[in-house]
Each structure stands twice: as C-alpha cells, then as structure tokens.
Image (cartoon, rainbow over the protein chains, first blue to last red):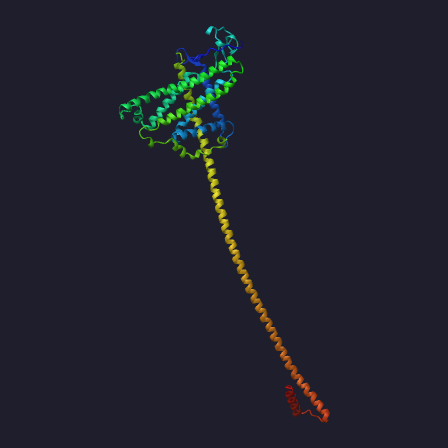
Length: 297
Length: 162
C-alpha cells in the first residue's frame, strides 16, 4: 500500500511549545509556522519589489504593483477616493495574506511531510521524519498545514475585519450616529427590531467570514488528500487548478466583503447622500485611470 | 474544543496578522502608494505635455501658415511694385532715348542745314567766279570789279529761284 487515507481533523496539531506566557508554554501549531512563512514571503515580495523601485516596473515589482493597483482602483471605485485609500491597506493585506495562505495547500510537502508519534492513533514510532507513505501514513502529524484550514486564523481575520469596520464607522459617523444603527429608537418598534437585526448581522458576519473561508479551504484540503489516496500521484493534479481558483476566489471574496462592509459602515443610514457616494470616487480619481504598462498588460 | 479553537493559537494568529498589517502599513504601502502615485503623476504629466506640445505644434503651424500667407502677399506686392517700377523705368529710358535720338537728329539736321547753307554760299561764290571768268573770256576784259561781282551775285541769287 502506497499510503492510507490520513487522519483528517479540524483541530490543528501543536508541534512544540515555546516557554512563554502560558504555564505549559506557547503552542506553535503547524498552521502558525506557515502563517509566519507567509508573512515572510509577503515581506520578501515587498522588499524585492520596492528595494529600488523603478519608474518602468519589471519582474516582481511589476507583479506586485499590478496586483495592488487593481485593488487600489477597486477600493476607490467602491468606497470613493478618500475612503478607498483609507481602506486599501486592510483590504490589500487581507487579500494578499489570505491568497498566499490558501495556496499553500498545493505546495508539495505541506501535509505530506511530518512525524508519526508512537501511540498517537495507535501508530508505531518510525523516526523523526515521515512522508505520506506506507501503512502508518494515516497517523501522520503534518509539520505544515495551510493556515486557512485553521479556524483560529480565519476567526482572527474575521474579527479584525469586523472590529476595524466598526472603528471606521465610529470615526466617520461619530459615536452617536453609528450606535443608532443598532439602537434605532427613532422609528419605533420596527426601528428597534431592525437595530437588533443589524447587531446580530455584525455577529453573523464574524461567523460567515470565518467559516466560509475555513469551510472552503478545509474542504479543498480534504478533497486533495482523498484524491491523492484514491488515485495516487495523478489523482489530485487536476484538483490543484481547482484549488488555485478556489483559493483566489475566497481571498477576493474575503477582501471585497471587508471593503463593502467598511464602505457601508461609513455611510450614514440617515442621510446617505451627504457622504461620499461610491461612484464619486471613481469619477474624482482620473489620475488612476491611465494604468501603467504593467496594468494594461 | 471540537473545532480546534484555542485561545493561544487564536491570539498568535491574530497577532501575526496584525504584525503583518502594521509592518506593511508602516513601510510597505507608503512606498507602494508613492510609487503608484508618482507613476500616475508622470503619466498624467506626460499626457499633458503631449497635449500641450500638440497644441503648440498646431499653433506653430497656424502661425507658419499665416507667415507664409503674409510672405506670399508681400512677395506678390513686391513683385507688382518691381514690375511697375521696371515698367516706369523702361518708359523713362525709352523716353530718354527717344529724346536723345530726337536731339541727335535735330542737331544733325541743324548741322546739315548749316553745311547746306555754307555750301550754297560757297557754291554761289564759285558760280559767280565762274560766271565772271566766263564773261571775261567772252568779252576779253577784266570784270573783277566790285560792281560786277555784285551784279553777278544778284543774278545768281535771282537764278536760284529758277
């Protein structure tokens, strides 16, 4: 037997503990390592791209600029020029990070390289390093696991997204007007009910954000493992392209929903015409209309 | 927990993401935005310069066409003046030449008339002399007196009308 279907669990595996804070130590999971690697990869992209930025971009600079120019234009079109530029760092960071975090699942070695600990799920000790191969492969504790398959990460980003959305709402509309979204006593019972629904909606956003990303990526992860088990070597190949697409779509959806919710949060529900209309930014930002050669390409 | 939610893991992921954001917010995005804005500004400036150059070129062409038209008109005017001056000069020269020729002819006629008159006088004298000589031969005496000469001259003068 090449390998057995690995033990697939929702909880991530703790690889080791750093003696810090917690009496038992600070747990380092197999997803946290990839999270750090992802962050380093993003830093490396920026460093290589903008170490010596050129007027006519090439290579990595071209790729990074093209990606972020599209995101910046999108932010300005949706939220207006001023708010779009304010939201852009959050939207861009979420998109870039989630995209790379999603795409880790098709990288060779991720979830196929790890350790089989004796006694865990009845496994025998086979040594410090073990590949997804052989009869004990279903007991593999992967060293690396895509961060997006960790609910802790998706929940963290979801909470950040919702909290930042609320902060922008408070800053733009003021505390009173923003709170009246949820305590809408001006319009009677119906207003109060709508306010309660708005509040529930904010909480539901955290759940929908986190579980949408987690569910899609975890399902894709399981799909790849099952296909690799059913049709070894070649079975998962076709699904790699699907997972690339799903990873992109999920990152885009996460970033766009964050942008839309931020835009809604800074739009007054009492006098929406007083605030920056979403399309006004597009009209007011002709400077970004001429896309550089990179974007035109 | 069945879903694997762990406070420490959650916090570590949260902090990791926030570190990423803060670093990008502090160092990454300002450079990115500045680069994009600079490029957009450069492109905008280039487009404006091109538009300005196009307008200047159109103005210059218009100015050149105006100058060409003016030069053409001036050239035509100068040519017309030159033709007129040449015509005038030609007329003057012709007139002068004609006057000069007439003057020469008049002078020549006058000289001819003088010479004719002189020749007539000389001829008259010679005719008188010949007549006297002839008469002397006929009558055999000397007729060279003042009275005879006067008579012969009067005869010759009268005979001119014959």
